Length: 410
Image (cartoon, rainbow, N blue to C red; front, side, top):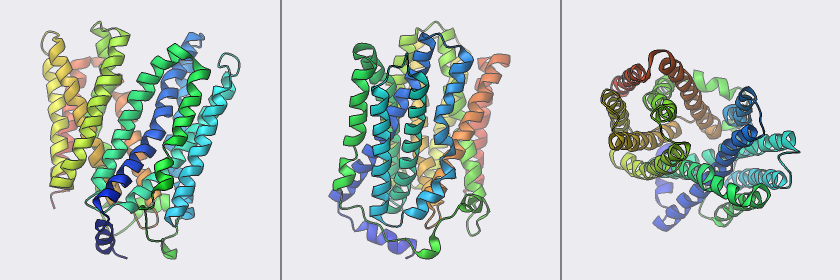
C-alpha cells in the first residue's frame, strides 16, 4: 500500500472518530510526562534536604537515561508490533509496569529505602520510554499526512501539560499531603488515562508486510538509507532548537542574578512558560496543517530568531520586568511551535515497518543536540557573559533559518 492510498483511507475517518483518536493520544502522552516530571523535580529536592552533596545529586540525572537510550530497543518494539492490537498490548503492558513501579515507590520511606526507590524510578522511566516508542509508532500509522501535525500537537501539549502538573501542582501537593499519600493517586492516574485507548475501536492500521520487519541493524540503516535526503533532516534536527534552548537553559540563572526569588522563577517557568508552550503547541498544529511543512519551518525558525534578537536587545538596556516577561512569552511560544514542526517532519522520515525506531532516533538526536547546546551555553555565559551568549544564540538561530531556506527550498 503506497502512501497516497494509505492517506486516502485515513482521510475517510469521520471527524468525531478523528477527534477521539487525537484525545486518546493526548492522554497517552500526558501519562508519560506527569510522573516523569514529578520525579525529575522532587528527587533533587529530597536529596538536598537529606544533605546529599551536589555531585551525587548531579549523578542522579542518570535516571533519565532510558529516555536517551530508548532507540536501542525500539527495533524490538517495531518487530513485535504488526497490528493495532499488538501496539495496544505493548502500550498497556508498559503502562501497567509504569503504574506498578509508582505504587511500589509509594509504599516506601524515602529516608530509609532511597536506593530501592531510585531503582524503581529507573524502571518506571524505562517503562514510560517503551510506551513512548509504541505510542509514537502507532501515531505515525494512524494519521494521514495532513493530520500528523495535529497528533503532534497532542504530543507536545501532553508534554507541556505534564511538566506543568508534575513539576508544579504535584510539588505543591507533595508539600501538603506527603509522599505516601500523593503517589498512589499518580499511579492511579497512569492507569486511568489508558482507558480511552482500551475503548477506542477507531484506531486501525494495516498489518505490516513481512519484508518490513525491523531488526537491530535498522538503527544503522537509518543513517545510510537511500531514496530520501535523510542527512538534510538530521542537520535540521541538530540546528533547529539551538537558538531557543541555550536561552532557556541560562534564563533561570539570569533571573537569579536579577534577584528573582525561587518561587517566582518556579511560577514563571513551571506555570507561565509551560502554559504558553501548551497553547502554542495547539495553535502550531493548525498552522502546519494550514500552510504546510516548508512554510512552517520558515515561520517558526523566524520566530526563534526574533525571540533571540529580542533577548539580545533587552540585555542592552536597564532591567525592565515587563519587557522580560514579554520575552519569556515569546520564547516559550517559539519553543512550543518548534516542537510541532520537529515532530511532524520526523514522522515524514520514517521507513515502513520501522516507525518506532526511526521516530525515536530523530527525537533522541534533538535531545542530544539540546544537551550539547545547554552545556555550551553555560560555558559561554560563565566565561563571556549573558550578552555574548545572546549574540551566539542569534547566530545559531540565523544559521538554522538560512539552512532551512537553502536545504528545503525545493
